[in-house]
Image 1 (cartoon, rainbow, N blue to C red):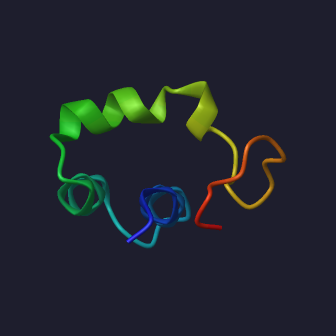
Image 2 (cartoon, rainbow, N blue to C red; image 1 turned 90 degrees about the vertical axis):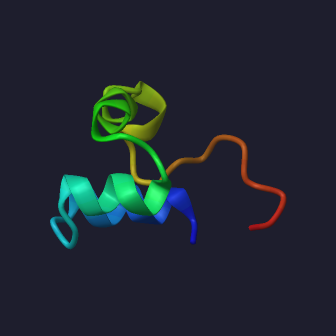
Length: 55
């Protein structure tokens, strides 16, 4: 599963923080660090910077 979509689902309220961290395979504390990352603060569908090779 695409990690960006998991984070987007968390931001939209579909899953809670524990579920999101479990899907990503990280600790809840590490997840808090991810959420403060400015690169992840935008919706992956609206970013216009580098695209994934697999997209």
